[in-house]
Length: 251
Image (tube, rainbow, N blue to C red; front, side, top):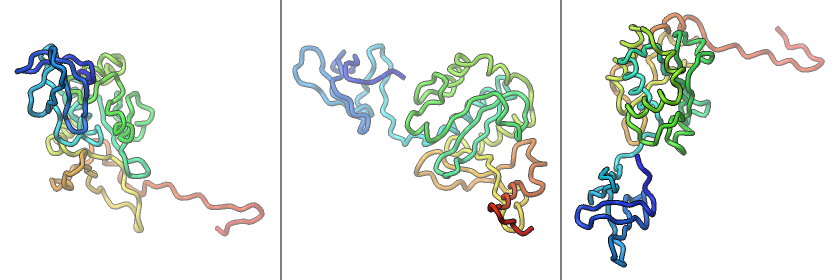
């Protein structure tokens, strides 16, 4: 995706080559001067078929952007699985505030509890809102293929760690993508214990990745392979007893 700013040379089907003098990406309108004309011409990027000088179309996206990158990451992981990089796993979980979701792509041995020690790449939906890139040299709005190419160039050694077979997880992930993409993502955050202990194997939480989408109403998503044994017992550490100097808390 090329930059669009004052000074960019463009081509219009009726006016020929011109130069942009003003850009308003909030509305999708630009102003441009063609040839020796003293007046500028206002053009709409949605309807006026404006092109870059090399013929690449300039399109104004009317649809609301994704507020989080997780669905794009799911598409990346699915394609890499199909290419033989099956030891690549996507973990997503909410920040404590609940306003944004973090993500971690990790490679190598599939061990969900040891995930923080696995090699990979991290990101946050909060950062993505202000700078919509994954952080490995990609461009905003890059396609799935472009994201994979950028990652392979950015960290070829790291991506090589994902080569290998994990058929169970690959099948689970392909089924999840078929049910959720392009509008929804999953979170692997464990449910907090409530009175009476942890509910046995609740459904995987599903979140819409852009504003205006209804709540997910499809079939429940099962937990990925390797999570079955994690649901036995309560997974919240007990709060430590408060001890005040000079006093002993009754046991």
